[in-house]
Length: 228
Image (tube, rainbow, N blue to C red; front, side, top):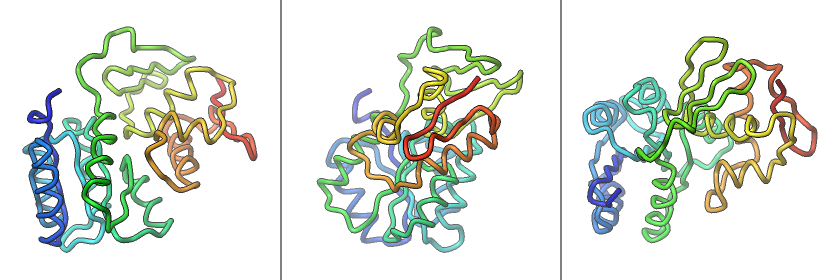
């Protein structure tokens, strides 16, 4: 996909930040849209269906967490990458963001060149149309469709946020194999992404709630494995 075809939505209540980010990403050749609060951001996300949404957390009228939750409920935006851009670096804020369905968390201030690099890394996660039906695999009673980012568990279709899906896909690729935490971070989040130590735990907890607690075993001090 060419840069001119890639759509990015920026949502932040600070005009200066919006303009700086918009200018730098537009200069890279991306289509960039902006919104000044969560309500406007949700509306533009539905209308524009961007490949990437960068959300501030603290905003008037509707904050980024609530906006992300609404966006994740829209089937037309299930493959959109969502990242939070905020000055809040506390663990609880990051956990809330990931639980809402965010893919990444960027702490500001951030240098424009670093942000552009980060955006490129985030966009590499966006699923294009190159998938094939060979991406459909069955593990026990679970069918994983890597092409459409969908799973069917005991006949019930479930749509997972991107990181939860990728984590489940990794663990089920080798049932009963223990995946070390550092391997999970590398395979699911990538070396270029810095995330907190609780990130994996949050995603595993959400998968346990949706897929079944008995499928996920914690190996203390090592990592996790998927059990049939």
